[in-house]
Length: 368
Image (cartoon, rainbow, N blue to C red; front, side):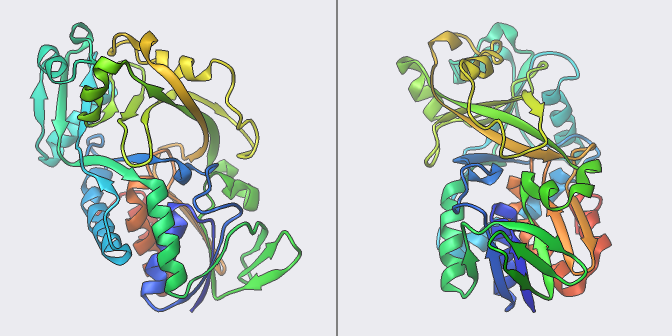
């Protein structure tokens, strides 16, 4: 088949990879560079982890995600996963860290449980007085986004995929399987797959009832010199407990120490707008993390990176199929870790056209 993919984030790149491996003729359009620093997939590193709430199918689906990443590493000739494990910290009953622990218990996945003193002894950047308990799992780490994108793009070019970066698509014609380019040209295919991330509602405005776009930001920090060895050895931190909705990735790959919080976001109608960091924005994000971290005022802000994400109401992934077009959004802030698996599943849909099976898998209703 002749297939067009719109958007070269991790979902688009992975879908192109899986389709090319199956022998299809693929053209991949990206409005910017690959990786695109404005896209959610364009940051330095993202978390992979097993923990999800009880009742969610995503915890089990991580098994498939790991299998898909291993297949991809074999294709591109090396792994871009720093498997340093993950830590979660609970500070009050019923907080997100506890919810994730309940999910691990339900799935029968092991972890190491520690009290506040024990975890602070291991990780001296933590304040033990603020911690109920913490737990560590080896099933997690940091995926190196920019290295993955660069190596996938190289593999795709060598393998015959036609990559058109810096080429903006302005409209989709689902009925005829066409895309309209900003330069006025039209391109047609047997199937158009749209993996445009936060820009998807520009191409399909009707999907705003299903997908909500937020502008957020993360901060990169330089810790005090005496704590740098501890951070260098630290796992990724999935959640810091309480109401912070905070996560942390230590220095890994091309990325430095990164703090991000789900509290720091606001609605936007335009993924291109409001992307410049505001004065003091990095310090505002940093200071959300006290507690459970002490001495945060000594952490120097080195960079602030804005992001745009789409979310569904229930924070699952999303697909919409119409005519010769499939729109796929591994969204809601946790899609990157499933990128390789999403690509394989979308490639399977391109051949079997079982839209409901794809949607069930994206919603983690059934791990097949």
